[in-house]
Length: 445
Image (cartoon, rainbow, N blue to C red):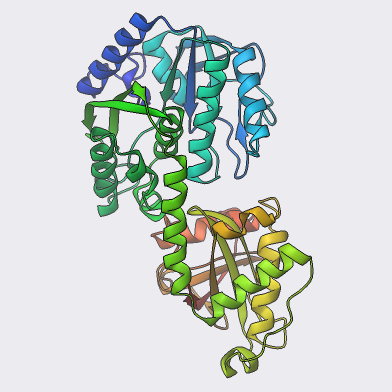
């Protein structure tokens, strides 16, 4: 279910997206027939972490649409603590980082409240998305289903989320061709119940589409693992530059689990990538794997090119897992004897000392994809006009604070966005005076 607050009459006038509103009412009627004990709501706007799934704790929560000019419209719910507790236990047993940590004030977000405005369910489980991989979201969905079956709950899962936010030039995020491409792809995959295709969706496409519903759908699909799925798209529209997709999933008999096939698909993709790796990336992989397995630094192997052994430069080592960032550490200027040593140092840091993530474990090594960025010497510039988010990286400085952002990053397609992110990384306000530097990058994959 989509979650634009304007679906709520107190926020909008009630007629802005009439087809979507009617589809939501239709879903509500179908759920009413089921008479669920519990509604599990997956929201992209609840507490969210890069490496942890938040499962809301406590007995109850409430919220209102005050942020959208309708404080009088309130939603309150009770939590199914037994259900959420068993989900937390199951995911931890399966090695997924998830649980009730991190929420200071139990308030409902609009990703939960808009669907519940139609469903009016009084007992829910609320689960957040994370920065973890799509496969991890799928596996969490499997845990939701297992917990419900063990408790013999009659339950419904609502995957809350909007599609691309880049469908129109005058929309909230402007226009990108990838927005329409993403929405058409997801709509078609759901219409054809193609879950393997869903999991094969490129993370770069998701970033460029600026969506917030993909991982919610993946988690929902995971709950149907081991079942034949009957799907129906009830409505799709995007009148304001944001795609609103409403669809229904239902179990239609048992079948084989798709998880092993999905994992095999991903392994095949990784093997293709690895077969094309150059020596920069092969060295990064060797350094990371040697360190994770032995906790020792790799010595420079014999046979490396003169460029790696004789030149010096700043280097960033990046690691991804299932399309999601798993670590990235770098130096803006050389700190080692040569590029090879710089790659070894920074890739080791990326898998063990990136403060945003837990250290990479040995069991993850076969799932990792590496890239190496070699930086040119940064040069001072006078204004943003001398930047290009695709071609140049940027460094912002104010006093001792500085922030860097590499060029050509998924979802960073304007100079203003590039500089804004760099400022946030540095803890510099956009109203403060700051200087700009730019640099070029040679990216090795």
